[in-house]
Every structure is written in C-alpha cells, then in structure tokens.
Amino acid sequence: MLKDITIGQHFPGNSPIHRLDPRIKLIVTVAYVVFLFLSTNAVGLALCIAAIPALYGIAKIPVKLLKKSLKPILPIILFTVVLNLFFITGDGAPLLQIWKIKIYMEGIMFCIVMVIRIICLISGTSLLTYTTSPIELTDGLERLMAPLNVVKFPVHEMAMMMTIALRFIPTLVEETDKIISAQKSRGAMLDSGSFTDRVKALVPILIPLFISAFRRADELATAMECRCYHGGKGRTRLKQLKITSNDIMCSVVCIVCFAVIFATRFFFTPLI
Image (cartoon, rainbow, N blue to C red; front, side, top):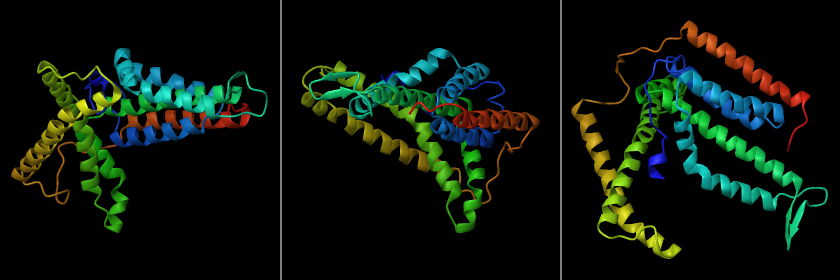
C-alpha cells in the first residue's frame, strides 16, 4: 500500500502542461476544485470527469499512475459511501430497509456524487505535483501570495515550508517501507493478530520514523545554513517566471470550460 502513494512525486516531461507557468497551474487547480463542488448535475459532473483523462493524456502521465494514486484513498471512499448511504434520508419511501437501517434514493445519489468528487479531487490535485517541480511550485506559491507581504506575512517562508513538506512525503513513505521490511525480517508480526495487536505493532515503526524525520530535518537545516540561506530577501532565481502565449491560451480554454460547467447549474436538474 505504501508503494502506491504518489503524492508529492514529480515526473519530468515536456508536455504543454509541464511547460505551463506554475502560477497558472495553481490557479486552475484551485478553480477546478471549486467548480467540482459547484457541479450538482449529471452534465457538470460528466464534464469534470472528462477533464481528468484528457489532461492526463496531454501531460502523458500513465494511467497506471493514476490508479496508484487512487488506491490509498479507497478506505476513505468506502467510509464516505457507508456514512452517506445509511444516514442520508429522503422524502419518499425507502428503497431498502433492513431492521432499523433505511436506504433512500437520495442517499444513493449523494454517495455517487461524493465518490466522483473525491476521485476527481485527488486526480486533479495530483496532476499539479506530477507536472510541477518543487522549485517551480515554491516560486509559483510565493508569487501568488506576494500581496500578503504588505501585512508583513512571511510569504517566502510559508511557500518554502509547504513545498518542503510536500517534497518529503515520498521520502517518508520510502523510509516507512524500509522500517516495516526491517521489522518483518526480525520476526515482527505486523499483519496478523487482533486490532489491538496491530496498533501496538505500530510503535516500533513510528519511533524510528520520527527519529529519522527529525534527523532529516536537522540535516536539511544545516545544509541550508551552509549555503547561506537567509530567507527570500535578496534571493535570485535561475529561472524567471514569465507568462507566455501558451499560458494565455490555456487560461482562455480553462475559463471557457469553467463557464460551461457553471452554466449547467441553470439548465439541468441537480442530482442532490
């Protein structure tokens, strides 16, 4: 399961999406999430779903990678389905009743919509990290939050902190996998026993993981100090962010698509 976690990984490429300005990608990603939750009808949701394979195809990201990114969230999807299916009530008669448990059509439709939104949410946000390097992501976040400098908000530090946290997710996942393998080679029974036994078995995994994380953080801080890093003041960049014609064309296309998705709210009956 740990090997299936792809959050924070970057896959270099030369596709039109890879070449987009990181600020454009950040804005489009946030807008996609907003319009995804504004879509309440079948047409709007269908357009949001269709955007995912189209974008992954343009970015030339393998489909198997998309499956791997969705696999770890299956428990969350299952929990969402159970929670909404059994606790959402409707106005009419229930479709199915088992003892005191009643399942309504409204609950089923709400489950379908929520599952679609979760899958599209993970797929859309994962595409951002797949096609954007950590350095570009930091620069894009810092440029977008630059107006907050007026109120003395530590924009550069916040962007750097978020990017470092995102960058170290694959590293911590790999470290956790190594610790689990080492514990199993020493005879630790991590996959068997009762729920209490499995929780107790996490202790010899979490302790070395935390120690390793703190050690990496200390090494990173030392490395940054050795390179005379003192924040964003006076910092230069190897690559300057510039809006190109490709960015403008992509922005226009995205605006049109979002406008169509939003317009469906007024012409089609909502599912929930």
